[in-house]
Image (tube, rainbow, N blue to C red; front, side, top):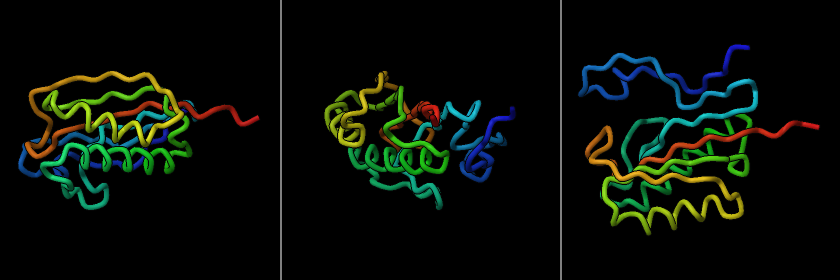
Length: 139
């Protein structure tokens, strides 16, 4: 079975200021059940415009809204999330970002990894979140 790839794009269009030419997508559905969501940031999925610049909690909120939308497009939902990874550019953002993400995942109980990095792909991005979900069997 070939995996389903949702919202394909090329990095030369997404990052015009960088010399990149990679074919990627926002979401991959593997074996019809496992859903891998690309790291999401404070960015509008349709326009690639950055939002909530300077606001880590606002960027986390947009990242989670993007994840919810991408999961829906893949036939999944936030309740199916098993793992998230949170990347922060400053450990002082942790409390606000985790509180925001916690509102989106209340009652889901995924495993989580938090990482502090020196920077993300664009200087205005303060937080990035990726997710892995598994769609349950349809009995």
